[in-house]
Amino acid sequence: MPPPRKLRSIPELDAAITDCRACPRLVAWREKVAVEKRAAFRDQEYWGRPVPGFGPADAKLLIVGLAPAAHGANRTGRMFTGDRSGDVLFAALHAVGLANQPTAVHAHDGLALRDTRMSSPVRCAPPANKPTPTERDTCRRWLTAELALLTPTVRAVVVLGGFGWQALLPVLAESGWAVPRPLPRFGHGAHVELPPVAPGREPLHLFGSYHVSQQNTFTGRLTPAMLEDVLRAAADHAGIVTV
Ligand code: SF4
Image (cartoon, rainbow, N blue to C red):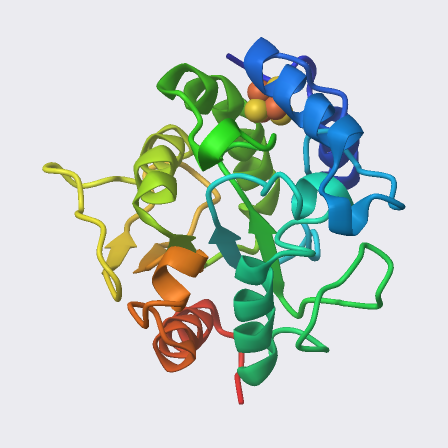
């Protein structure tokens, strides 16, 4: 499904995303959570809408997750902000020099990313963190539009988790990069170089990392060092100097 109109810039895209109501189940869920709230955030106003990407419009590195967390980005309105997954991700981004601070608490906390933008294949918080295949496919139009706008500068993508990996491959294929067959397998540390097949594109380096969910970080399946290694490698291929 294409975006409702031609979007000429990242700010235009971000504004259009926040008005989307294409998935009835997710619209109902994100708004219900925003009204009921978690007790710890009872005095806060929840965002309760689709969450746009975060980071500069001329990013060289794109990080792709899964979907907003019900009491994280669905509360704060900014990707990965206000939950444990974001705590791990932003600490790692700061450790390698891609973020100006290690924490992300709310949308106006001064956090800025360097040459890096983060996005997700599904923009509304899903029940149990599980979008349906139909919701994933419906939301794909936003990631496709975002990638098109980032095409002049983006050179590497880090995908957090198998869901994002599977969701992104068709986006890349329809956006002008050759995706090999059989499809590249997701894994932590996976790295595939995709040659361009459309004008105006450069080779794109695709990296996989285990997702920063508590299921992975609390069990030690994904350590900060493992995440930082993938971010450094991807940044290096994108032409970004890390620390
Ligand atoms: S998940 Fe995506 S397509 Fe569905 S309502 Fe949210 S923004 Fe729209």
